[in-house]
Image (tube, rainbow, N blue to C red; front, side, top):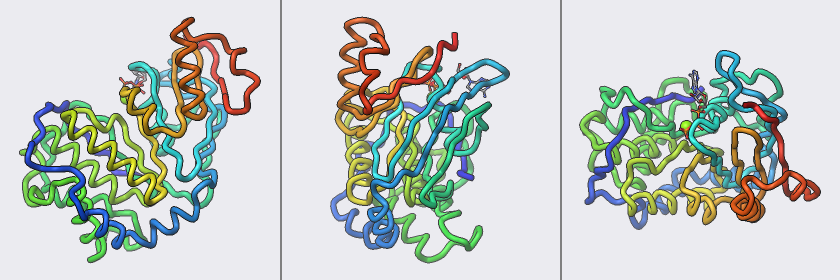
Length: 297
Ligand SMILES: Nc1ncnc2c1ncn2[C@@H]1O[C@H](COP(=O)(O)OP(=O)(O)OP(=O)(O)O)[C@@H](O)[C@H]1O
Ligand SMILES: [Mg+2]
């Protein structure tokens, strides 16, 4: 079960002198995680998540209805959609934190929930978490192996390597609650990287980051995907970055869904702009497209 870290809404004041993705960090990172990276790369192309006709609701109010899609190892899978369309709720369901009313979610190819690193959406509360940066990052290593809560020297090294990648090594003994919003976001990403042995889930990861830090964050995630074969599942409102990096897109809408490769999403969007949300028949005969869902309003 992933550790869900809640934090308050953040400000955009990222510490300018800390740098994401310092030169040389990759070398150490690959050394520490060589075995996982190899395993991951060997599994590229295998189906790892199969979602079949799920519906999700809160107190009988439908949020997601009759949704199906699949994720393969190595995919860069982006979930887009307007506020309140059910993106975070869907991630909760994938993480096993929310049970579907019907349908099923299968984790395949020996994928375990412990193999998933999770960066939650920034919400109100708990920016005051009383722990140091290192303790929070290190907590991402719990669940990577069968030693229970005991952490090894290797875990320590993994934590330090990920802090280095995110440019937060100099903050390691600082209290989390004293950090700026952008710095806190980096700490949480470093933590998520510690637990992401096969899949990294990110719920709006660039919230609170300045443009340079956001762009560094995207290129870091891109590297993790390309160099290690880690599957990325990212919720984003930043469509230009989705179009740049995603291999597949799931677009949640209140009445219908789009799921398919990014190239098809571009056509879907173009068509949707022409005529609001097009018509289903337009792509209905193509294997690459999958429309699901019924009107839930
Ligand atoms: N714990 C909850 N109890 C009741 N309703 C909830 C709960 N969490 C979310 N909802 C409702 O479910 C719907 C979907 O919420 P969700 O957080 O999944 O949307 P989202 O697509 O992630 O939105 P955003 O882009 O704003 O993050 C919203 O109408 C929201 O009010
Ligand atoms: Mg959300």
